[in-house]
Each structure stands twice: as structure tokens, then as C-alpha cells.
Amino acid sequence: MKSAPPSQFVAVYHPFVRTLHWAMALFIFLALGLGVWAAQLPRGELRSDVLFVHKSFGVAVLALIVVRIVARLALGAPPYAAPLGRLVDLAAKAGHVALYGLMVALPLSGYVISSASGRDVSFFGLFALPLLAAPDKATAGQAAEAHELFAWAIGIVLALHLAAVVWHARVKRDTVLTRMWPRFRPSV
Ligand code: HEM
Ligand code: HEM
View 1 (spheres, rainbow, N blue to C red):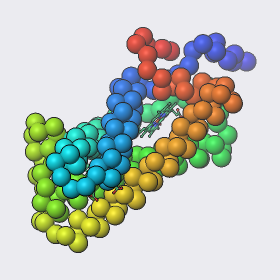
View 2 (cartoon, protein in one colour):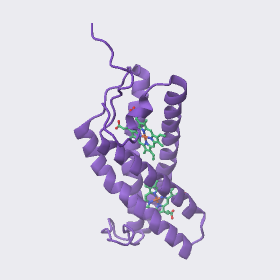
View 3 (cartoon, rainbow, N blue to C red):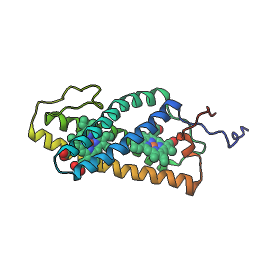
View 4 (cartoon, rainbow, N blue to C red):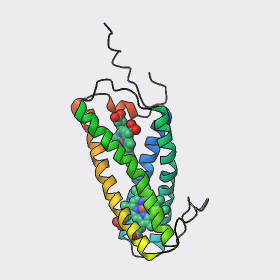
């Protein structure tokens, strides 16, 4: 009979996948905070400056999500220490797919707003991105509506993601958080 591995050995995500997870989590939280702040501000210099930083973090998310999807497909996910159960597994997969979709749709819709408004998109002024569309007020308005909707959606799915983390760590007391936790030494 096969014996279970010692409990201190938890299979974890590849370090590159974990690094991308935490770097992008930081950029997305910053982009969300700055976006909400910009939405409260009257048109003017401060709003433009806040949006400049907002857009730069958003551009970083758009670039990194491409790398992340390729890395995730190439490197896979570690097996769970204990099976999740069919429904929980399905819910986790659905939540993760929704987050991946929103990590593409959110910055892309932002990029369309700026393009259709004829406003520059750059990464902290280091380089400028080509505009995606000719200036068009209607397109800019529709993209802004989509962008706001996607921002709400990611906020809701993230709240569920964080609730799931707390549930695993505090209620189930399993090793799910360990799978993504940053660490500086390789784990088995
Ligand atoms: C993960 C990335 C992003 C997140 C989480 C995010 C989130 C947000 C949020 C919450 C708002 C306020 C929405 C509102 O209440 O009207 C906003 C506004 C805005 N965002 Fe983003 N955004 C992201 C990426 C981008 C990118 C890449 C661009 C452009 C290149 C962009 C351009 C804008 C613009 C121009 C506005 C103001 C919209 C308006 O005037 O109605 N965003 N964003
Ligand atoms: C903007 C913020 C975040 C985004 C977009 C995000 C997105 C994701 C995605 C897409 C996955 C699935 C990985 C995969 O299997 O492909 C994941 C896994 C995970 N995330 Fe996040 N995450 C965020 C923030 C956080 C935070 C703040 C925590 C913890 C406090 C966290 C903890 C975890 C854990 C533990 C997993 C592994 C789940 C598992 O192995 O089943 N995440 N995250």
C-alpha cells in the first residue's frame, strides 16, 4: 500500500508562476485603487496624473497576462494534497478562469478607451503604445462602460477568491495557501 507523503511536503506552483501571481496581484490592486480614485476626480491635472499611473500599471498587467497564460499552460499546476471534491474543484476552476478572462478584458477595454479618445498610452512614459482605434466618441463611451463593468466583476470575483483563501486557511486548515505562498527556498 502506498503511504501518504509527510505532511510538511506540499507540492507548490512553479516559482515563476508564483512570482507572476503576486506581482500581478499588486499591480491589479494598485490599478483598481487608482481607477476608483480617478473616477471621483474632476477633469484636470491631478486626474490626468492619476490616470497616467493607472494606465501604466494596467499596461503592465496586459503584458504580463500573456506571459502568465503561456507559463501556466507550459508549467501546469501542482496536484492538491487532498482532493478538493467535485463541486469545490469546479467552483475553483470557474473562479480562476473568470480571473484570467478579466485580467485580459479589463486592461484591453481600458486600452480601447484611451485609443478611441485619442489619448496616449505609455508605460510610465518609457515607451508609448500604438493606439488601437481611430478617435471615436461612441466607441470610447462603450469601452468605458465595459471597463467599469469588468472592474466590478473582478472586484466581486476577487472577493470570492480571498474568501476561498480564508476558508481554506482558517476553516479547512489545509495547504491550499501554501501552494501559492512566496518562498525563497525550493519546496518539494
Ligand atoms: C488591471 C488593469 C486595470 C484595472 C483593474 C482598471 C480599473 C479601473 C477602474 C476601477 C476605473 C474606474 C471606473 C469608473 O468607475 O468609471 C478605471 C477607469 C479608467 N481606466 Fe482602467 N483599469 C485597468 C487598466 C487600464 C488600462 C490598461 C487603461 C488604458 C491603457 C485604462 C484606462 C482607464 C481610463 C481612461 C479610465 C477612466 C474612464 C472614464 O473616464 O470613464 N485602465 N479603470
Ligand atoms: C488581483 C489579485 C489576484 C488575482 C488576479 C489572483 C488570481 C489567481 C489565479 C488566476 C489563480 C489560479 C492559478 C492557476 O491555477 O492557474 C490563483 C491562485 C491562487 N491565489 Fe490568487 N489572485 C489574486 C490575489 C490573491 C491573494 C491576495 C491571495 C492570498 C491572500 C491569493 C491566493 C491564491 C492561492 C492560495 C491560489 C492557489 C489556489 C489553488 O492552488 O487552488 N490570491 N490566483
